[in-house]
Amino acid sequence: MTKVDHKEFVNKLQDQTYENESKINRQTVDDLKNEIDRLDEENTNLKLINSEHKKLNAKLQKEIKDKEETELMKYHTP
Image 1 (cartoon, rainbow, N blue to C red):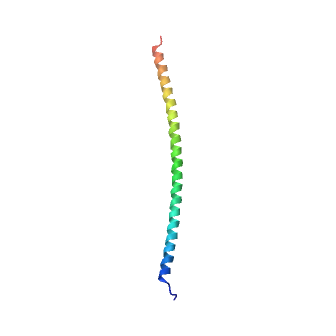
Image 2: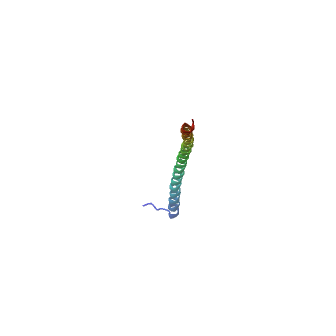
Image 3: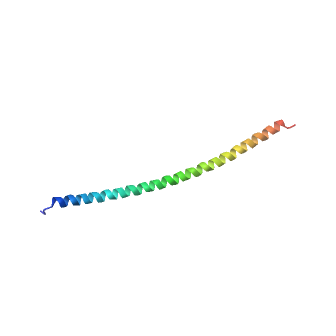
């Protein structure tokens, strides 16, 4: 059997643990960055949809108002 220096063994184990934790942390950071990018894109898309809905709603409200005015004029014209 090979004699293992306890201090050296502990140091190697700590180094391996640090490397593994670093890899996990880098992966977690990368995953979080990707999630932030995805959510940012989704937020941008939702803002665009909201803006377009507001425009459409304004257009429809104007059409309704115009039709109501037209109908009222039919009843009030001699």
